[in-house]
Image 1 (cartoon, rainbow, N blue to C red):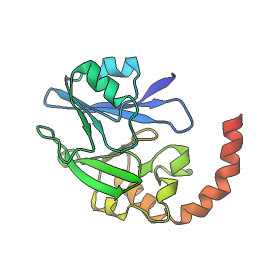
Image 2: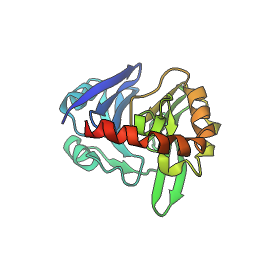
Image 3: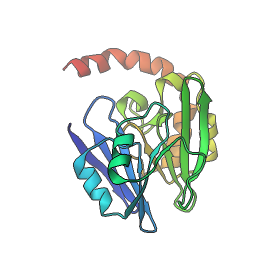
Length: 199
């Protein structure tokens, strides 16, 4: 599997799998402890995460984002926190974003850092963003996640694509505002995306 460290920031880093969907995982540290968010097993990232602090837990924020979370948690001897109601002894607040039979998603908010972690509802990969810094998941564009507007993040970590650290609050507002219009834009761009995928 090919992957890369896409972003490094003052409390952690993001790694992204080199594939069309650009699955992204995060290591975030606070007070000598490190949380792995929706991780994909890539040895260089896990080795680097170990330098950030003692492993505190593996967090799965989307019901279907199993990825390698269970295996990594078992290997590190830490809890697998799947759709947690809270994260004790952490800087994060947990908010339920989507609670449907077919889609259950939580987000993490670190108020002090104004850091928002959204596993699926928005992303920076081309599949989501359609040429913008950030976009809403195609299946949510008809009913956008308007509740995300209550956050004014300096940084957004997403489940697909590199993390966003410039004008994140504005990008989030625009992504939600443009979601329904992006239904048409997404369909118009689909043939080009399919050609790129074949190439």
